[in-house]
Length: 395
Image 1: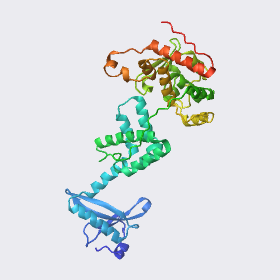
Image 2: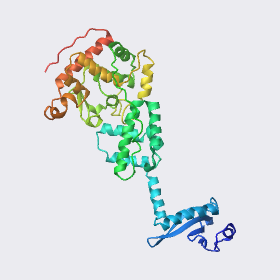
Image 3: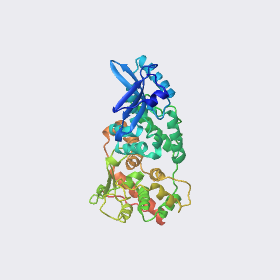
Image 4: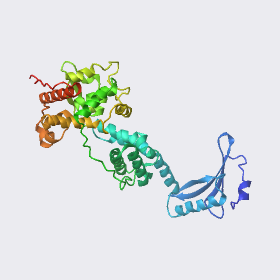
């Protein structure tokens, strides 16, 4: 029959469950009626063709939505591709499958396959899963993410979180798409060609007056105790914020940062000197292993804590990481050898890299204890107004 508005209107199932009326003028183009759930009559336009000896059928659209002419034009395109040997339905099925492979759905597979230090894995996970970074890309099919999409996300990150964060996030996303490219899940890396945000070198070193002001402004709460411990230990904020009671050895008088919580993947053991003990004994001991915060990974309210602390200070802009850099610099000024400073910082570079790292296994335990005793004494002199008095530790 010739499919026209009138002929279509006259079609009926007449007791059947399914009926397709094909057009004489355009073979393969049809109008379908079938019985749906609850007896509802479903109407649609279809295109039918043969490929590799099998009959294939493509849904063009609902009969209530497409006009006859719109459906006919769509059928001509499908049938023309089929005549050239393309399996249009298989292509559509493949596209549907790819559409289900969104960026967010593939991130878990990427993280499971990624080999890196635990600390690095946590950071990569945060950048790829937290909607605050690439949330606008999460629902997009991974092979449909464009350079424009990535560029817009990076601009937003730089505006809200700064160029340094945007630069790090860009590197993480690029590594993800490189993996997707290798796995055949994407045809290109859309990060390539996007703007590289400039990372300004961090050279802020707090002077003694600023350090004393920060120490005195710290409250008797989790954040205040963490900041003071950051001053005394020169550790990273996550290392102190995630402290656990099980990491302390009271008999040995030490705290050990385990390898799985260390950015470098190496354990670090520091002595528990009096200034640290004074802070730690004031921490309420509950049933949780974590000293600080309410979550399993420890303290997380960094922004709120920093804003509250800054409200009590009258110093130039500073970051928590400046405490670590400042401690390292001041230790050098106080005469601590570079290799001991590196050991305190938990670095695996400089004097403990390359061939030196293979043969030199010393942890400089005594030298580290002496340097930290000197540093603690310096902090005490700044914050209490007393004179520095350093006593050499016995062997």
